[in-house]
Image 1 (cartoon, chains in turn orange, green):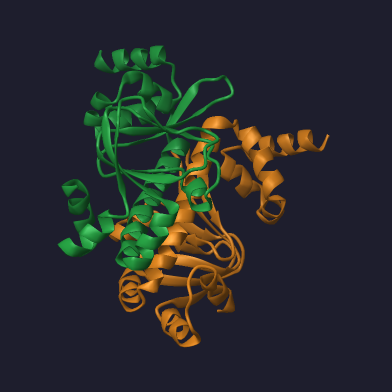
Image 2: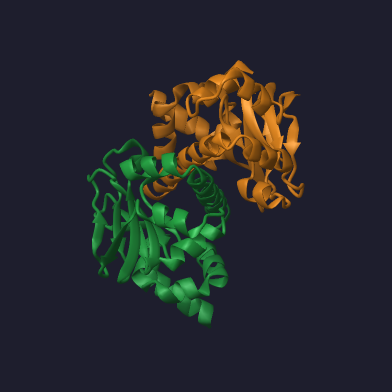
Amino acid sequence: METFKAHLDKFITINDEEFASIISFFQVLKVKKKENLMLEGDVCKFKYFVLEGCLRKFFINEKGVEQTTEFAIETWWMSDTFAFEKQMKSSFNIQSVENSRILAIDYQSQELLLEKHPVMERYFRMVYQTAYAAAEKRIRYIYEMTKEEYYVHFSTLYPWFIQRIPQYLIASFLGFTPEYLSEIRAKLRS
Amino acid sequence: METFKAHLDKFITINDEEFASIISFFQVLKVKKKENLMLEGDVCKFKYFVLEGCLRKFFINEKGVEQTTEFAIETWWMSDTFAFEKQMKSSFNIQSVENSRILAIDYQSQELLLEKHPVMERYFRMVYQTAYAAAEKRIRYIYEMTKEEYYVHFSTLYPWFIQRIPQYLIASFLGFTPEYLSEIRAKLRS
């Protein structure tokens, strides 16, 4: 739980008593590698915060292939934001990439949390602002770079990330076949 | 200013006195069509809210061509979120598409506003949350659809938008040449 407290401390000022109250709105989940947290067609009940481990979001494309669109590691949030806020069915799947320990909050609990601790509005404002800023950057990269260039950029900026995530998932994220990703990696090494 | 009040009323509850105080943190700008609000290399000083008119965000790609990545019409916000929050130089341009009336807030004023009116944390949390949800959808579309399919999807969902924005800017947003967009439109009509 210290992970979450340390994370909150970066954005807002809360004392131990407030933190104890805040954390009571969350459930702690332990999930095994490749366990499903949400399936396409499910109502998006939860927003997840990664304490330890890694999650991914994906959909099944028209060829029947899993297309990963997002990863979340320690201190990152993951949900289908639109479906969560509207409490609608999601068209995404969320699955653990590694054995993970996560916090989950449902919509009703989030509303009660925000009512009781308005300081969490500030926290979530900053979280969504940062997420949106990252999405703006990502959209620009999509316009600006080929997928090969994006991979090079990504693996230069976040080498530890590339090391950590299984290659076939990196390929799925980039829309490559695993074979094509191996080719690019071989080319980069040479 | 009623546009902004009506917009805020959708998210938060404030009285006239509070609104008068909130609005005092903003400047009202009138800009002519094609006027630049921010140039690439400028520190991103402002966040803009469109009262009337339309703005676009673009960068100059390596071929020297303007690549539009975003539009903002009435009640939408526009900025380079990352550069604004860090008060850094932006690598985007913001320009008016039509004669527009907009609200602008600088970083310092935003901080003072949030301090004096914490309810605005809730408002901006919801704004960024919605913006992020839209970006998540957009990123999925990019994975899932060809640009032609995206155009059809876009023009079916938002025909009034396609009517309103000059064709060469729609082409720039989609990464098409204006000629190619004309071809697709002709094909769709036939």
